[in-house]
Length: 316
Length: 259
Image 1 (cartoon, each protein chain N blue to C red):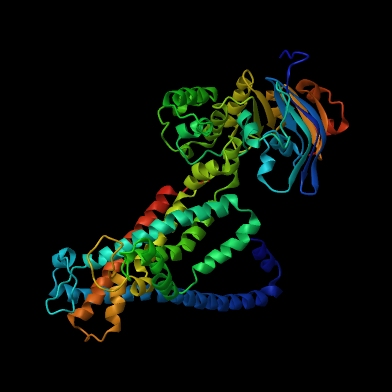
Image 2 (cartoon, each protein chain N blue to C red; image 1 turned 180 degrees about the vertical axis):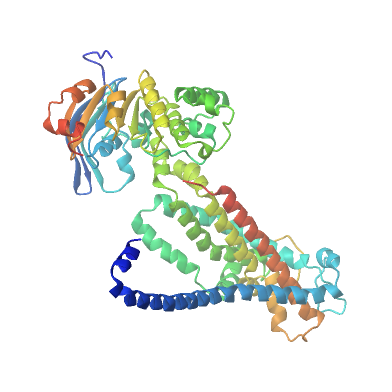
């Protein structure tokens, strides 16, 4: 209103105003340009995802034209390259599930305990030193973890369990758990530190000890963040490849016993992808069917994670 | 209101100094807290009244670099609450606190009130039921929540949450109850409910309340202390402080010429 009144009072300034309008027009163009640039950057990642899903689904359709879904889900053998070919994905799923369960059995308690220590007990100096070192652990290439499992952890485990074979889900799972610990610890610690101090003060004012406060007030308040970190850990474990390819053996084996060697979905894909299967053959198509299965498993956990987050979100 | 001339002492600050690192926040405070009375702490922002209040349950121990000097004697056993030999957890078992912003725990209404009892090792269901009910009644919120004890406390309104926090503090039968501006986040109706409650509660517990609201201090307290820049300027019966303050600074603050 003010500028209107002013321009009406000073006709001599009108050209200046139109200049400014011209600049505005130019600015609008550049704004649009930037918006388009940002949108295309975002589109690249979305389109990549769409592309991956498209390839997986379309190739899997070819696969399921030759193998029935019922067989795929119920067969107890996975021998796609044999003359007597069987396509029971549960064989690979069992390896994935067992190794992931072993990994989570290590990573969830250890990661949570570390997070509680760093967030509620450690003084700031310890935290400033310990957290970067911990995160460094997450930066070690998984192939290194794989050889660590095969050459260090397996021999140690064989001292305790002499009957343990050279490749086992147990050894690979344990090391995978160690690999995942930093993810859980770091994310859980962030979630617990986000719990407002007023809540802790309330708990201390009631006469609670540090441990009681941590377990009965801070952990429940941070639960959505903790759950999110566990879900991320599951996705990491299910999708982990190199450690299992190196240390768990690669023979398909329907087993729920961690003391045995077994292939997982991921290590099977590596094995087959490295071979020279003819494009379009049934063996080639199994990669996509296995990949789609993997994608669906992680999708379920991501959705579960979103749901847990929404359900347990705390409004402070 | 009739105030006896020599009420029993519940606590007494003796030459209390407090430091946040190097900064001296409380300077030589001497002040009695009378048993089963409401004592209000007033003064401008940053005068140290919250710092003083939080000394009574050793809240400053939670942060590094804080230091007390002097004593807060607690009666009838004449314990020095600030003594390094006294466990702060023991202190907090006897001194309850209600905070500025309601801070219910992420638990059910029942578990919020039962919290202090569980901390003290009480797990008997009947005892918990009894004490939770009587604490909720004591905090004048029983009628509103008795049918929804298992709901999350965060579903309550702000005023209800604050009364729940009072119930939580009451459940463990504290000897002294600290209120740190308990109504500053509440609307006038919820504020009136809390003030009435404070009035009711002093029959059973000694109360120390920090408030920014002078009318509130005048309404709810028996004694008032005016603090300024970390010093106790004046302490006396509320009527006297508000009607004929002895110190010019108190008068300026109360009449709104400062702060």
